[in-house]
Length: 117
Length: 113
Image (tube, rainbow over all chains, first blue to last red; front, side, top):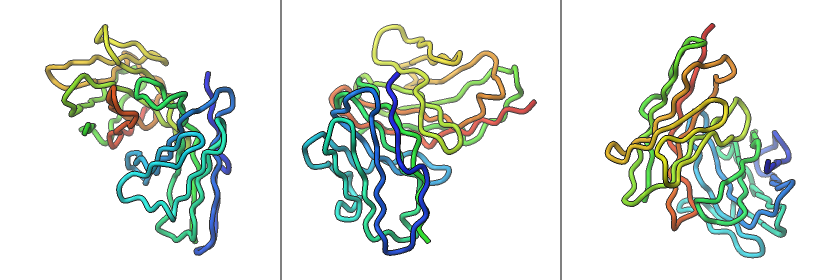
């Protein structure tokens, strides 16, 4: 089956620093990748959608200058949390799809636990 | 825009007993419906999905779900739960012309011996 990996699985950083999270599709080419944020005991909130080679589309209320997304290849997307603060602490999950339609299954990564001190 | 409601925040069930998780959606046209399972600290795994056709959908791990348009529901069932079924379950809805998925708040399933 399609496998999506995320690195790191967990990261602890100091307030004010930047953190990069990688999302890779290991055995398929992902035209579209999605980044979600999940709060404890809460649903997944879509942050942004990225298509290979183009700028990410951010959801309303998500600061694009704070959450930088790059989808440089068909197998890699990165999320950089810039100048992280404690309120950015969360579980970040990516998913990948061979195209952007809802009928194309999204394959989810295992998530990255970010803790900002 | 589509939305999903999962009325049950937490369900406790005995091992071997049946399980049903409720999901109600709001969408004007025929929705694309999904059930995902998330184990602690893990990403989401697709259990099953409905796009069209037979309204009773079979999934992995012995799960099934039934699409009922009249009730705007897509409830998930399993006849006999195993301890390994303890997890968080999310219902999601998508649209044919939109790649976005809207997730419910999730239902936590606890399995007691």
